[in-house]
Every structure is written in C-alpha cells, then in structure tokens.
Image (cartoon, rainbow, N blue to C red; front, side, top):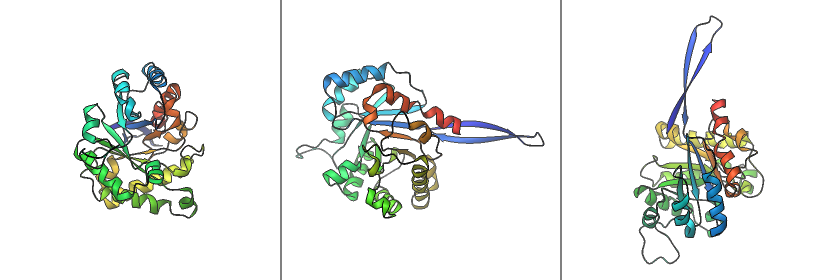
Length: 275
C-alpha cells in the first residue's frame, strides 16, 4: 500500500540530508451508477483495456449489478470490480437486495457504501451503513466508505460535524480499517459541475485524518487512504491530486469516458511531483 520517495536536499554547508516521504498507494474508483447498456459498456471496457495506465495505482470500476459479470470477463485484470451496494448481512428472503457472498462469487473485491445517493435518496442512515460495512469487511470485501455534507450543512458551518458523525458510525462497528478507503464526497459537488477547490478538499481530508488519529489510532490515520469525489474530471484531477491528504478519487460521470478516466488515474504523476 505504501511507496517511498527519497528527496535529497543540499544545505548551505553542502551537507547531504536525505528525507523519506511515504506515499499511500493512489486509489481511483469509477462509479458507473445506474448507467450503461451491454453495447456502451463493451465500448467503455475496450477503451479502458487499450489505455496506458500508471502501474502504481489501485483502480476499481463499479458497474450496475446486471453488468458486473460482463465487465469482469472482459476487463483487464489491472482493474478490479466494486459493487455499488450490498445487503446488511447474509442473503435470504430480502427481495431486491444482493449479498456480499453473491458479490464475492462473481469476483467483486470492493463495495461502495454510504454514497450520498443511498443516504439522501434511498434514506439509509449512518448506523445502517455502518452495519453494512462491518459485514462486508467480515467477509473480506473491501469497503469504499463514503462521507460528505449537503450544501446547507456546509453553508451552516457543519461540514466537520457531519463528516465526523458519519465516520463514527463506521468506527463504532468495523472490525478493522485494513480494507477501508474513505471517500469524501461533498454532496453539493456530486453531478453538479461544482468542485471543491483543492484547498477546500484538503482541509476536510486533513480533518478526517486527524479524527482517525484521535478516535481510532495514529496507525490507522497514517495508513488509511482518503479519496475525493465530486465532479472530478480530466481537467481538475491534477491540481486536486497534488494535495497532501488526497490519496485518489471516486469518479462519477467522467468514469464513463474511458480516455478521461485514464487521465484521472494517471494524475498520480502530479502527486509524485508534489511529494
């Protein structure tokens, strides 16, 4: 998960100082949401397979459930599959739901939980989402754990309160943070064309890392990747990637465009330069 870069600095006395900077492995997820047909997804997969991608990036895509098998069987093995949702426990008489066991059976290694559309459209609350995450992790499936505030919450100065409350719901129940990636997605920036500035995003990411350090452990805070989502595209990803606590992206609409998604994945080069 961690890579190491060595920076060499000469002081005025020309003595050599070697500094070690540890970078978390960049993580980029593509959330296709409720989009696509067999034909359009086939083209998207072809575009991704032909793209040149930086090697040191963990990449996942999240197709609609009905297309997971198609994507799994045709997509390069450089990219893993994530589900867009999962049930709170083992399968059974739960019409319309899908279990972690079923997702594992078709090759999913990750699941997106707590996305704002699940919270604010479907009505899932913090505790329900936390239980989903705990069960997924207990079955060795990684969790992309989403948090983020509404526009009125940001304007009311409640961004940190909301994000910390949502984080606590995960922290209260998850067995381990080893396979969790936190996705900060300001709801006001999802699909709106509005993007948090690099400074706004960094401020929240740093606060999230500080919260983990105080409320979970310093080790978890240093090892957990915190990625940004909210109208990320090929034009803004490089500047966002330069921020110290932005460890990647969760991408919506732009992930449906193969070449642009590749550009976002490859923005890791900006992170390396900034480090």
